[in-house]
Image (cartoon, rainbow, N blue to C red; front, side, top):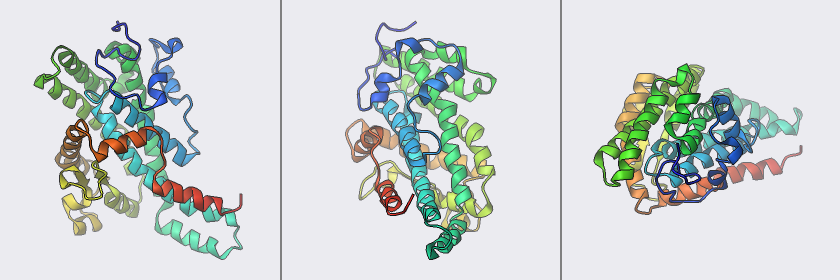
Length: 322
């Protein structure tokens, strides 16, 4: 049962009302849905279609950021995911910029240059990464929306067999932690359980959803993805190293270039996540609660604002016919 407050089953105050979709996640006609497919359909409502690459990526990023900003005490994964999704957005913009000359026609001299560049930058590999962004959203976004309104019982009622290990375990720990934090906002055990649950969600994402995507990358694409695995949770012009997580810096430039350490390898990736990504996000999460450039960036992402590369891509596309 809920706590008699719309969008506040959790019993925790929604500290930010930055995005329209946070208030509209729960419409009375969607209350207490009983299938996972229904929730997935609901979170997809109003989303740009998959073929609108950049727009859809910004919408996914906005939902993640909005959930975190509304419930920063418990939705740690969604905050981290917003930065990761934004990084995927950079790759998506590169795909769009590479694809733009296709509309010029084969006789245009730039078309040959485009074909060469597309091969060099492994456009198909970037397409697989884009698909991974969509797969993660479909896999886990529904559970956040269901939990906000119906709590753990709603996820338990909707989860299929594939969800019943890390995803359900993760929300179970989050739910226990949220209960302790309702009673005592300073509960260390509550915070520990919340982080434990969110890390379980992260593990679920990495092993159940992303690994098949990485398995599809070419050898060159894996190297590019390894160097592209850079997260800056500070969003500052002079970032503090404690807010940074770089795969190639962690393992070494030469090791990454030679493919000796690879983001597509589940052992290499999870060791980096545990050693670098999680500590960096924990530090940023603490700083976000005190006000920071990272918090400002989260608000911008939640509003669906375009980054510089998105604007360049839109401008470039506007110069071309079609």
